[in-house]
Structures are given as C-alpha cells and as structure tokens.
Length: 521
Image (cartoon, rainbow, N blue to C red; front, top):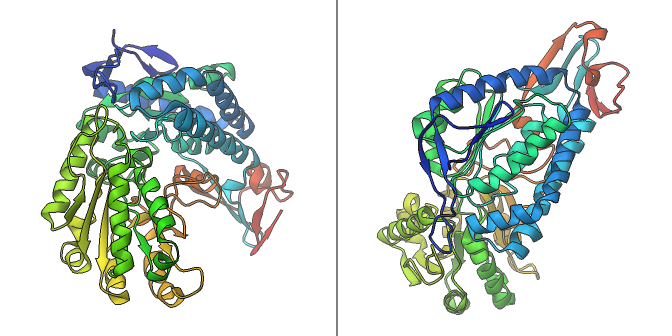
C-alpha cells in the first residue's frame, strides 16, 4: 500500500504520478514501504491550504506557537525508540552513538530553543524612532514556508523536524515539508506527532503538511508558487540551483545550503609540535559518519617538508586501517565514484582507496588524494568540487605565498580551519592567511576540526556561495536563523492602540529594543 500524504490536517492518498521504495543502505533491499511521487495537484492543494493557515496564524499568539514547539518536542521523545529504529533502517546510522545519542536530543533541543525565542520575541528586533514616530519589526511572511530536508541528517535537519522547520514555525509561518527520499518513513513519523500537536492545541490545520517526492518541474512549481512565502533547501548544488532559478524568476526568497569542502590549513609549526594528534583528529573527522557531514574536511593544505611526508604516510595507513562505513544510498555511492574520478582526471594523485566497496551495503573505500599547489591553482574549479563521503584531498604548497594563492582561489565554504603552533612560531603566517580565509567561510575555527555544528545562538552555519545561496544568513543558531523566514514591517505614524505589543511605548513584553539609537529593555 502506498503511504498517504499529509494535506490540510488529513492523511490522504496522493494524486501520484509515480511511486518509489526507499532502500536499506546496509542490505540494498527495499524497506518494505511505498511512497508517492506527488503531482502538481497535490502541490497546489498544499500551498492553497498553507496560505489559508498563514492568514489564520495572524490571530494565534506567539505563546501558543511556542506551546506547539514545546509539545511537539515532548511528543517526539515519547516515540524516540520508533523514530530511531526507522532512521537506522533508512540511513544505516548507528542507533546509540548517532541517532539516539546525538541527533534526536539535538532535534528536540532546537525545537525548544525556537519555542523560547517565539515566546520572548527578541528575534523580532524592534526599532523605534520616537521623534519621527516610525517603528519596525520582523514578522511572519505571507504564505507557507517550503522546507526541503537533506539526506544526511534525518532528524536534526529533517524537513518537518529540523532547524529550518523550527525557525519557520517560530516566526509564525506554516510549513510544507518535502521529505528527503532517503528517509521518508522517518519523516512520516515526525509528521504524525507534529499533526497531533497541532490538533491538541487547536491550531490551523494547514500549519504542518507533508509530501514525499516530486519530479523536477513540480518542485520548481512549488518554490515559485505565487502563494508561497519562502523556501529552505539543503541538498545538492545542481538541484538547488534549478530550484533557485525558478524561485528567483518568481521573486520568491529561497535559502540554500549546497556544497562545501571546508578547507583546513595546517601550518608547519603545528605539524612539528603535534603531528600524531593532528593525524588522529583529521582521520576521525573525515571518516565520521562515513564523511557524510556538510562540514567534512574535504581539503587539507600543507607546506612541503619532511614532517609533512611523515604526516601523510600516517594518514594513508590510518585510512587503510579504518573500517569502511555505509553510505546513505546508491546515489551517494555513485556520486563518490564520480567525484573521485573527476579529481583524478584533474591531476590529483590517488594515495589510497578510490573504488566503491570495502564495507557493507552501499559503500566506498576510504579515499585520500594529493595534489600540488601548482596543480590546484591550475585546476582549482575542478579540484575543489565536493566528493560527498569518506574522502579528502591534500594540497601540498611550496610556501606561505602559495598558501595564500590557494586560499584566494577557493569558493565559499561553511567552515575554514587553521592549525598553528602553540609556541607562537606560526603567528606571522596566521596573520597573513586568516584575513583571506575569513571572507571565504561562514565559520572560522582554530585548532579544531570543523565537523561539529553546535546549536548555539552564536553559531553561523552558512557562508558565501556555494556553501549557501546568501552569505548573510545561517541555518543553525536561534534566533538568527528565524529571520530568514520573516519580513521587515514598518509602522509610520500608526496609532498607539494599533501597534503590535513589541512596538508599544511601554514595552509590555520587556524585550530588548533599539529605541532612538540605543538598545534598551
């Protein structure tokens, strides 16, 4: 039986143009469930109902939206075993150490952080000029927010459970979730609890909706629909740019997280001090989750020398000795094969790995490649393409000047890391390269691998293109992430009784506001 979609508060059969069966990555066999590929009719219905919910939410208090987020988090925890089991079956991620131990707690934590922000209203950033009697505030968009979830974080970035969902809801928007085809069953379980929370609180029935898959033309229709408010997308660069083109033509905001190789620069002094520790840190980071992290260190820049050669030989052996993990699906395995082939065709030397297989189910050997600084500069466009998985490229530069040249040739990335000596011998080099790298990345790290993304208000999980579609926004970090799904509203000489509470003179909410050039509460 084909699974139903969630439209207008009901689980109903899709107007399907086709269907698909997700595969268990470890066995390469179908999970036993069938899901629909939705038509334009499904999309139009969802958007129409979402637009109605958007208007209905104008009369729903921020406190009640916060109640929804808190209740939803509570309901997720009552089904954690079932959700974790389903996600394990669909992604092959370890249950205890990854899904239950890290990702599910992160999911409920960011929902509760979003609830807190929805309640305290500081994210709205009120600005008041009392002399001119002009006031402004961030508020919900007109229309539903569409969220496309990625394949690599089925819980914490899921289309109806992750950060984009939480941010859009906290701003007061309904959400149309487009599940990732790698884990539709996991998304369905989340949607069941989201709908139950909506019903428990008597919220608009179109506040949360779910479809599983569309063909490309229908996806383009979805993000460019006249009634859609905005879209959040995490996924491949090629598909994301197709959606962006459609959204841009229609004048609809779309926030993209695409590809990132997250460069790591290891300066000579750091290598001399602690090369064994650095080797362990790098290998652990690169192979974590079979390399399927958006912040996976895909390029490491090293200066040529005897210590570097010793370091590289250690990396080769560690890559060979490490177990080969399971990839998320056949498409990821094929992408790895194609990505490694492209790097080799551009001149990169294969140090170890390079072939599919070596583990259980969909998999690819742990792969390490090497190129000189001269080679990288000659083919920088190809040699910095992301090979999503357990792979990394070492770039061996001649000197500090060439390091700077390589960094200048990089596209935008989510993260950039510099390892330097603790005794200060690399400080001059650091001062030269940090300003160059700083503008290439959303998050600059020192002396730590980039893989972790802490859910904290100060986090920036964004960066220049192609890391994201806009360098001024983050997908992680409440309250900053909320403003992507909001519009700036200005009130000019509006009567006091007609102002939103955030802009009233008395500040009844007691929140921080920018009044006559000063921050005050």
